[in-house]
Length: 230
Image (tube, helix red, strand yellow):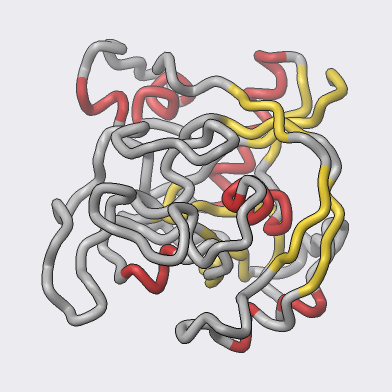
């Protein structure tokens, strides 16, 4: 498996979740901003890669193959859930998808700024396709994981490259809780923004949803794990 795909220990903390009132691109689904407590957990340094996924599917590719270090896409929420269950048995720890609150907390890494990189974002900081005027400035495809700078927690690609599934069902932010998972829902929350997006969709508070069986070419996932072994 790629060397970068290791876990980072995310410390417990409290943060303001959701969009800032002074953010001109903030939407109703990101409001109201509120304080949330997050317990300690582990989060993968990078999204699950094509190499990781091929190993899971029983079709390993050479680790030195460039394609093995691309973030995997075209995987459904159910596929991601199955992967985390498989990884749990291999690592003897409780692997899962991160909740929305955990994801945003880890993305912000102690910052209250609009983007992971601060008040603005540039093509040097993340993989996205267009600027806000519609001018193409990005590569137009996925980039290898860890091609852009890590955030303060040592996590790569929290903004751009591929959107990421979370554990949570899609609900307005004011109703969302760490424990508020409903297996009956067909809508799952996604985070992060993708390689074909505008900068506004790479903001730390941006959130959207997809049907849990959806498979998109800009949507992957990242593994979380609990601190206590299985």
